[in-house]
Image (tube, rainbow, N blue to C red; front, side):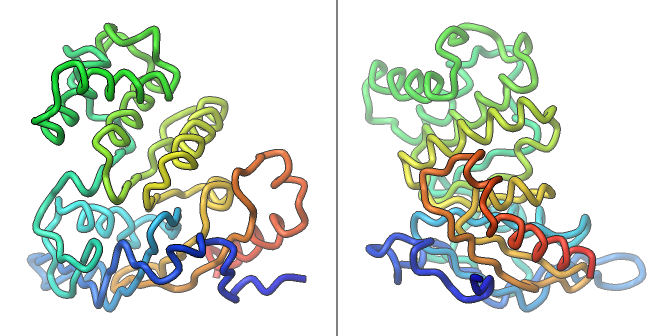
Amino acid sequence: MIDLLKPKKASIPDSTQTEVMLDLSNLKKVYPTPTGDYVVLENLNLQILKEEFVTIIGHSGCGKTTMLSMIAGLNPITDGKIAVLGKPIQGPGPDRGVIFQAPSLMPWMTSLQNVLLGVNKVFPHATKKQRHDIAKYYLQKVGLEDAFDKKASDLSQGMQQRVGIARAFAIKPKVLLLDEPFGMLDSLTRGELQDILIEIWNKEKITAVMITHDVDEAIFLADRVVMMTSGPKAKIGDVLNIDFERPRSRKVILEHDDYYRYRKHLIDFLEH
């Protein structure tokens, strides 16, 4: 019988045990309303280590997306601090890549051109060939080697999200932020893209923070699952360490006794 709440050193590489990549300290977000201030997040504290994959779950309206947009630098912080490797963030930056639920591609551009938008900005001193090679490499990794020159508007929703994944990894961010990237997809496509995401992540080892409503997805992908309390004034309610070895096999995990204990713990929290 495992202790679900006891930190597991095995879930984080030994060489990075003490290196905090992302630090959220006393984070607060307030929106003014005609009837007074609405406090979305308050006293939220979370440290995410280098090369760690963290999933975040909680009920709708608990501020998950607000928190992620603040980390991305797209939403101003009311109070507290967000730092990457100890350096407070100052708006958006290439050290943080974002994959949204909707890919937000330029529909008139090709897959390659959409990925190059970020690559050209982040690697301005590279040669044109080098930048194209980077973009093509990540499009190949997500299975779009035959779609370099297809316009985004001609791609299926699943293929568009593959472009979004390639674009985010291609800029080599320190932190990858994922806001329910598979939430709009059918279950088969969702499973395929989970496998693609984790395969690339296993190779790149970029610190990742992902919002999801799917308990099974949260367990399969994460080193830790962070559970947020319901809003207003949401904060971290519980943290569950996922002690499965990597690389992971979906079949092996589903047959593992610990999987169902993890699942019950998360569902009990959400239903509480």
